[in-house]
Length: 121
Image (cartoon, rainbow, N blue to C red):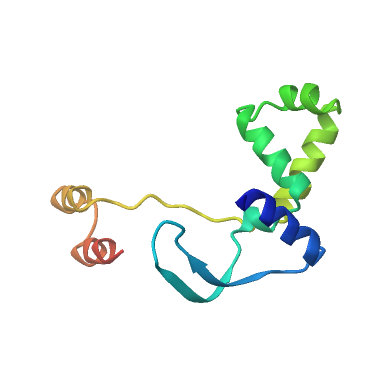
């Protein structure tokens, strides 16, 4: 039911940006109000979402995507490139655990101020 409603909503808006104003937990009597943007993947067109899902399910195999969609390798690459252009890159840096920071400090590889800065993060 949720999938069906979501697709109907996307059709209704014609691709215009959506802002979610209320979220309710289905199995509890809890609701949160405010202005929430959709996650980046949910902002893609339905066709692009399906393409991304297929790509993930094929473990990133461009060859399998060629076969699945009946399109050429360059077409698969171009479509992925177009989709990637719609998504903001998020840089992920692994957080150091307290033990790792203390080990680096103990070995003299970082200063006390650097250790404190890492611990704040």
